[in-house]
Amino acid sequence: MVYCVAVLFVLKNHKFQLTTFCTFCQHKKELGANSYFSLFCMDKLIQAERRKESTKDAEVIAVSERSGPGGLQVYEFEYEVDSTRGGMKRVFSAAFVASKKLYLLNIAHSDKPESPLNTEKRMILEEVLHSFDVVPLT
Image (cartoon, rainbow, N blue to C red; front, side, top):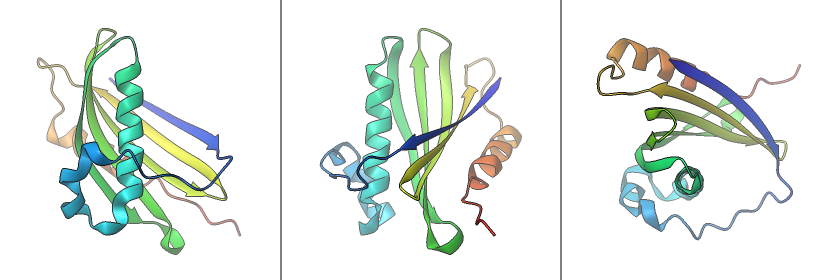
C-alpha cells in the first residue's frame, strides 16, 4: 500500500541554524559542503519520527539534492520507520523552499518482510519523488 501526502508550511524565519546535522556527518563527503541544509532537514525528520510514541526505530537510507527550475534546490530523503502501528515502512520525502514557504512531499510504502519493495514499484515511487518541483507562474 502506498500513501502520498503533500504538506505546506509557512516559515516565520527563513534562516536556519545548522547545529543538529552531526548525526549524519558520514554523508557529508558524499554530498559536498553545500548540503548542510539537506542534512539539517533529514535530522529534523528522523528526530520527529523517533519522538512519535508508536515508533520503534527510524533509520536514514539516503540523502540527496538536485536543482529544480531556476536553480531552486530540492532535497530528497529516504528512510525506514518501524512502527507499532503498521510495522516497517519505507518513506521517500522531498522538500524545497519557495517564496518563504516550505513544500514537502512524503510517500510511504509498507515494507514488510513478506512483501518488500520491489524494483518496479521503487522506480515508480522515485519517479513521483523526482517530479516534485516548483511550477513557474506565467
